[in-house]
Amino acid sequence: MIKTDILIIGAGPTGLFAVFEAGLLRLRCHLIDSLPQAGGQLAEIYPKKPIYDIPGMPEVLAGDLVDGLMKQAAPFKPGFTLGERAESLKKSEDGHFVVTTNKGTVHSAPVVAIAGGLGSFEPRKPPLGNIADFEDKGVAYMVKDPEDYRDKRVVIAGGGDSALDWAIYLADVASEVTLVHRREGFRAAVDSVEKARALDKEGKIRLLTSAQVTGLSGNGRLQSVLINHKKKGGIELETDFFIPLFGLIPKLGPIADWGLDIKDNAIRVDTFDYSTNVPGIYAIGDINTYPGKLKLILCGFHEATLMCQSAFRRINPDKKVSFKYTTVSGIEGF
Image (cartoon, rainbow, N blue to C red; front, side, top):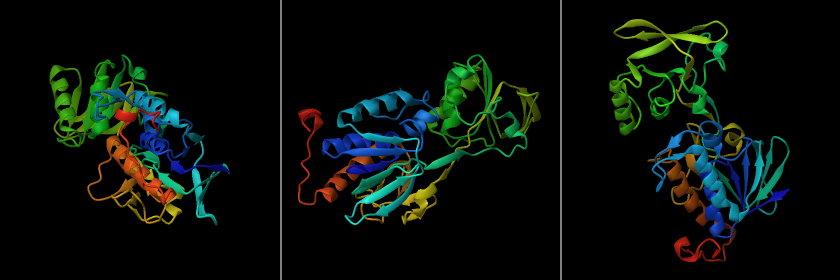
């Protein structure tokens, strides 16, 4: 049995930062993640995607952020159970939680912090009858390595942040980028929309709004897409890749059966310390919900910080939290 102070379900950025904050309080952490490496979606789905809203970092690649978080956590020697899914949770006689994975690995801790991001997830696929025929043959639901699209023709569908961000990024990589969105307006950040429209005017990308991809064709591999445009009608566009970015369908998986208060596939929490309705279990990052919730990495960092303070008080009810500034004491001071 693996024993620790805080058992963290999910080794994404929020979970990794929680290791650092717990370490400052001399609390040990162990992380469980179904993915084979730490980093969550940042490492698995878009390691080469630039992120712009991390304080002090005007731009950082997702994979580089994960590397930095791992280095930040390293002095506190976290443990990892990777490639295994947290399956069952029970309470032992000593009041600790016992979490067993789908591969039978048993963990015990007085505190559990669920930092599972969106939980398990799968991409939202457009309703195209033959799309499965071209998966991994020109159709991709995420961009793992932008170099795969070097000097290629790319059609992206979607109107959210991911669609806009990748259209802008690939403008300097692909030979041709077309962004198709069914509405005139976008659901992305204003700055990204302005950049995309500017690139469209410069001829670096092509924006097709009020349009939808309605068909795919090719001989063993994707060769063209059929687009239905509100004003121009049917347009057949030759392409090497079609990337529909319509978001992910979240699924909590076994966590849904742990007796937690759940709303719309998210766990309700108290914003005082991000505790759930089950004493000793917290939820931080994209997997939780509360009034005003924003699914941002930096918000997850804040939630992890307050969670660790509360976890310390729960684990050490007779001790007072001695808050220190790392700018004064450094890391070794803890």
